[in-house]
Image 1 (cartoon, helix red, strand yellow):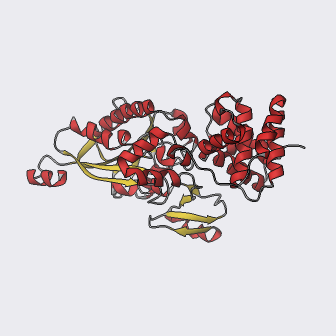
Image 2 (cartoon, rainbow, N blue to C red):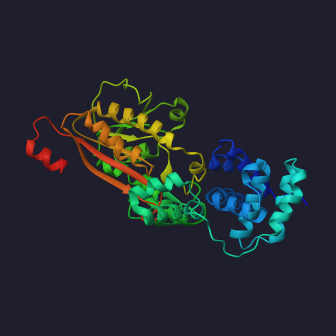
Image 3 (spheres, rainbow, N blue to C red):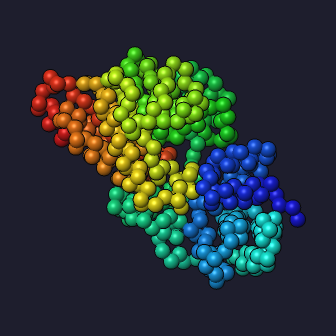
Length: 405
């Protein structure tokens, strides 16, 4: 039987993700010619398999008696797809999940494994399985869970990991000039001004932006006419929010191509590596450092990250983040305010970066506030933000101590 378009796309995308591709980007490309129904199923299959990968691999070993490490990639992906459909998608007929998984293996020129895939999937039932460890039960690497356990406690870490197993909600940012169009969409306002949750439909034509991401720019407390340095600005979502608030933004990013693709009227653009001294002489009243990071706060929508990330990656990100923050602080004017943010949950990329950068600054640089958004507690992705102010030289000494307290 021919393989359905949705399963064919899901298989091809998962194979490319296993070789380093980005699931969302690949799905957008490979699903371009699919019907909305087939595209939806392909997305469900890809993200479902990636979210539950540790559980699925355990089940493959449980039913087959074989270590998944010895299986060809194509065979493993076909088994994961079949297993996910049979254990998680009630509307998928079992015979279809089995038959098309077998056909996917044949299509990938692994005919010798077709019988094995068929035999394993035919054993699958709905009986609950006792997971042997919390990393398998939560489908998350053990080292990452231990990181979260140190920050949030064991129950808090489990709550975060469980949140990442659920399909994330969709949020959009709508500038004031376009809010009259909202009657065409099934959305509802959130507590964040300009942020709307999509209730149903795809909200095509609106700017998708997670609610956590939309909480960052308000921390700058921008006033009309203030000059803003937006470091690591591309793709420009936060720059657009700042411009709407009346800021005169200079968007800096190391990628010329990403800067060129930004569509933010009124923002100047400068291609520069912010981890090196900036080619700017101006001191800025407001600075945003939305630093590149591991992205562990976004594992609900980017589940492949958790299977690729290693502890050494946090050290690499940390070094670059400190350099970015220090170079930005060099350009902060007296009386100015800087926001450092990431979509990471990790201490190494958040509090530790701020502590290290400020430890080498004079006392007029003060950490005024820190905020965290934790998946499973707060809606949307996980985010961290630190607000740093540079006090004026004439600022009373006792006020400095108050701010530090």
